[in-house]
Amino acid sequence: MTSETARFVGDIPVYYDRGLGPVIFADYAADIALRTAARAPDDVLETAAGTGIVTRWLRDALGPQARLIATDLNEPMLDVAKTKFSAPELVTFQPADATALPFADDSFDAIVSQFGLMFFPDKDAAHREARRTLRPGGRYLFSVWDSPAYNTFSRLGQEVIERFFPNDPPQFLRAPFSCADIDPIKEALIGAGFTDIAISVQPRVKDVADPTAFAQGLVLGSPLYDQIRERGGVSPELVVEAMAERLTQAHGDNPTRLPMQAILYEARAT
Image (tube, rainbow, N blue to C red; front, top):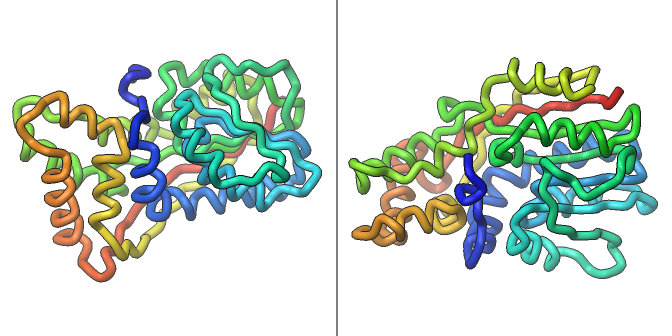
């Protein structure tokens, strides 16, 4: 996947945060933050922090002595994240590439990354960088999406996209599901110097009160928006309408009960 595929600029971060955040990110964010805080780390790094959904949970869950640095390659995402914190909360925001971290060896007790690995062009490098910057015994926690078979919002959304663009459909809705195979990731972690690897599959069903807002997040809150505009002939807003209708057809209305499934990895640095 190219870096262009994962660009979140313009108004995209706002739609991402408002439309997708409460539905598919918030519950998983609470879980990974509480798991991280359970070991009382003093120095915590978050990569692919996005609009600060996990960051907010981390700051609330960590002890007052803990130092938290939130990084993302897309600075406009961090601009939204910053609005969720006041100055005394001691969160540092810094643009950074997870595959080439600008931090010294042995800097952190924990590194956290929710739904970021799928967008890294060199995933093995991201694991090696996590190991390099973790202190021995430090914990590496990250999550990825399971396959579209368990995340129907991707599959149904792609169906709608292909209806509008049968000859050259935008592919972004496939991008977040490129890390569903467990064994390659486990082997990469071992190769990077991690041990005590725990893997948990996390199914959820979320009640969506406003499927249109969620569809706006999928279309207007992702690079899919630019992919649609580049092709022309169809407005992104028309795609939003069709996607919301398809989601309610499949999963009901008032509320729409949306199934999803993630995979969480926890590993210890040797």
